[in-house]
Length: 203
Image (cartoon, rainbow, N blue to C red):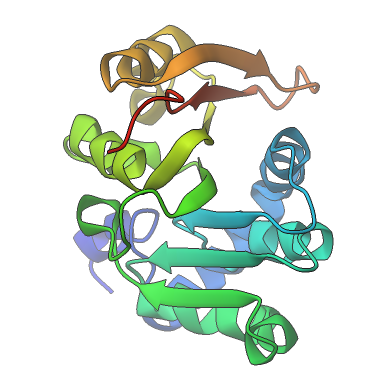
């Protein structure tokens, strides 16, 4: 694989290298996944959407809580779709988990569909992020929750996604009650920007 091909793996893992990369990131992002799910106030009937599910670890964790709900996921990597389908096979067979190929810029769902929409370490690849957030706003139910988890680091990839920037993006996209929560491990700096769709919004 070329050097440019390797650089595309974080945003869209493909092939054998993509599978290997996905499972490396599974380990690296494990804390991010568990922590984000713990923040979501999931109940047993929640209808949820994860954008950029990778190997499906967070979906598997959420499905243990939403035992009578439904969890949808989209990812634009066929390699990750196959990995997540394997991990969540039983929940998929029971109809509680539905995974699709797709991306945040064209969410294939009706307006006001979900109680919770979340994404973990994916906003870096949304161009422009405002368009992705507009689609999230559209598919959330009134009073629904959006949660965007990202790294709080100064590296080139992360520097433009500092907590105050993502907070401001959520507010400018129409979300209310916006706040940022910091991860618990100072050696693994992450945060989650959380907001709600206004109660009186119908779109």
